[in-house]
Length: 163
Image 1 (cartoon, helix red, strand yellow):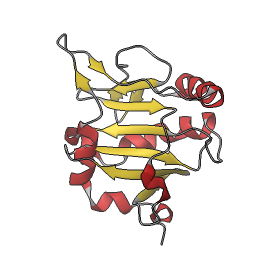
Image 2 (image 1 turned 180 degrees about the horizontal axis):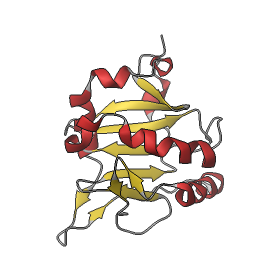
Image 3 (image 1 turned 60 degrees about the horizontal axis):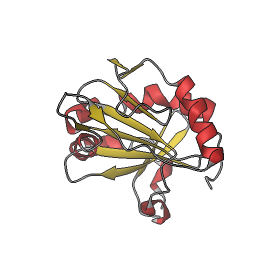
Image 4 (image 1 turned 90 degrees about the vertical axis):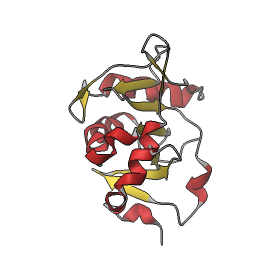
């Protein structure tokens, strides 16, 4: 059974969520956080730029503090940072019918537990893939970041299959 239909599946594994989130960004020598900027096609780039305009100034109560290098395709909140990257490639696990997923306010997310204790969520059934990495230290907050980000994703990234 595809777990995308199970809305609270990830809540059962908060330690794994925390591991996925910690791996999202790394700090530079000056304390800034960096994130790899995706390089999607023109359609996804347009959608991602629209998403950047819709993103909230706070996620999970944390202020927006974008990573380096500056880009409309990446965003961040707090420290340790929650990282959003838009226009990422389709995760291979998206083809696995046994992959864990959650639905938050009408947005489906593939859940990936990372070895460093962070969690990575990638949108499913949207015209561009949006990835949110939550560090281990923030995993105890559960889906709160996704709850805050879902309205912007719904508004800017239409349902469908990404190219």
